[in-house]
Image (cartoon, rainbow, N blue to C red; front, side, top):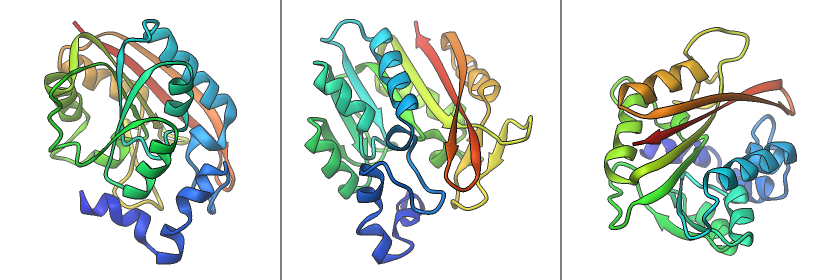
Length: 220
């Protein structure tokens, strides 16, 4: 997991401000986080999470919560949100929004209480490799983090101009774009059901139109 942290530490001058930039809804070159950069995406994700957590007593876990902009809006609506992230600075922003923050590694995280909803926005793309593929990530969430009848909501940039299941990011080390078909297939392979796949398009400042895959599945 150290390599995932190092992406944000390419330059000390950048690491001191990259989350500030995202928090302001701005970009660093082509680097954005859609939840702060694209207000339509943020609204859509808030509405989606509310639809699957109509009971405000539901416990929601955000994996790789980062700045936690979507999560912060849910807190303001009365939802209980916990956020797991490796980056201390990111968790500082999440805590300011009322998120119950957890600093740690996904593969070490064994919560005492499981969650009704697990939300992973841009998270799978950072973890994917030949050993820890999407199937294994889904399996770990289902086994250790999700209540029976719980819901997993995954959002990740999809391959651009390609029908491939996976596409390596040209600029971000060890990050992968993932198609909706691939994520749905991996979810189904571990027994997740009621799978929904949607695509949302937003614009990055340099590379332009970008497809975002959103996959919802249930553990029954």
